[in-house]
Image 1 (spheres, helix red, strand yellow):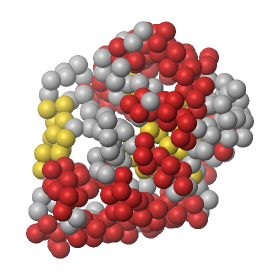
Image 2 (cartoon, helix red, strand yellow):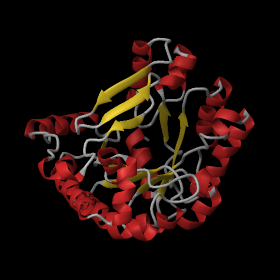
Image 3 (cartoon, one colour):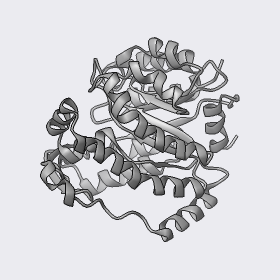
Length: 341
């Protein structure tokens, strides 16, 4: 099987030869382990391509060994970010829309022109049929936090501000032309990464999520489905209550932080109904467990999510401070344990 065939078979649950593997390695982990971590990618290649991890490797080389610097940058939306030099995401220092007073005059960044999508279509044609091609669909819940600042955003939710509804609507209208153009260009999958949960509960009531955000996500998901591509969502934190909503909305791949909700509990809700991109416990097992515990965690997700002739994409995030023996154990287990029952 090619990597693309393997990934599609896992998503569609039609019997891939093994579970596809998807790596994510922070630049800080490359600062810890250097060249030998890059070489490990050659031994255990990413079915989605090594380009992403290798880009972080190159970024770590440009950064050098200094790890105590604070970096600030302003993004295309006007938000000022502050982060450590290890290339963490960071935090919002100055939101782009600190007050709704500026909302009537606030300008979104320019959207890509036709030439961008023509180049993208040519790139998809070059990478198919061997590679699975995906692209981001645009943030909503988390992106609005960044635009408003988290404190302002949660006040907006509590007060049910009309401007919040207007911002959601305007963002979806901004994203939809690009989503449709990417799908028309032949992309396999459109992804969303919005963190809806804390460690123990959702960041808003499930009813609030369903009332304010779900209809807007559904509009974007429908545009993907109409073009025949797959839908992929990610959220950190506890989102147990809305997992059935995501299945009902037509999502094909869910990447939940299942350890904080209970891996088996999540499996009871959505196992066999949707493909799960795993999140091997990056708060406990990967950084602080033993290699045997790392392997056991991989075996568990294969048992819980991967017993449906597919249904699992193996993934575990490697951040700064993860012991070398645990990284090796994780990637070895992906290959040795990643067979479907």
